[in-house]
Length: 224
Image (tube, rainbow, N blue to C red):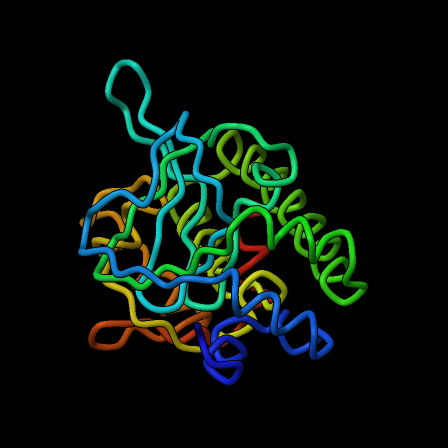
C-alpha cells in the first residue's frame, strides 16, 4: 500500500481528504512503470482506473483509420485524467502513451466512486478539474482552426503549465523538442525555429533538456 506521504507527493487532491478517505485512497491505488513509447491504454479499452502521472510524461491522443496521429494533451507529473470515463463507466475514447519512461498511478474504479460519493474535498477537486479540462478542449478546437505554428506551439507549452490541472509543475519542465513536437503536431524543425521566436519575445527560455516559462499569461494568449 502506498504511504500517505508518497500519495500526497504526486496527488495534490489527496491533501484535502479526511483521514479515513486518505486511507481508502491509499488502499485503492497502485503505481506501475511504463517504458518510453509504450501504451498505458488504447481507445476502446475498459481500463477500470482513474489515472495520474507520478513521473515522466504521458500523451493523450488518437490515431485515425488512415494512420494520422493527433495529440490532445500532454500530461506532466501531478496531472490526473480519465475521471469522465470512470464516472460514466465507458470504454476509453483515446490512447494514452508514455512519451518517456514514466510511472503511472492507477486508482481502481470502486475506490474512485466511493470517494465521489463520500468525500466533499474530492468532489471539489473533480469540479475544478472537469471545468478546467472543458475550457482546455474548447480552446483546443479553436486553436486548430485559427492559429499558425508559433501560436500552436505557444498554447501547447502553456497548457503544460496549467496550475489547476498540473499543480506540481513550477516554471520549468524537462522536455525535449521531439516531445513538444509530438504534443503540438509540429515537426522538430518547426518546433526549434518557433521556440527561438518565443524566446526572442521573452516568453520562455530554452535550456538544455527543457524549457522555463517566463511569462505564462502572454504565452497562453499568444497568437490570439
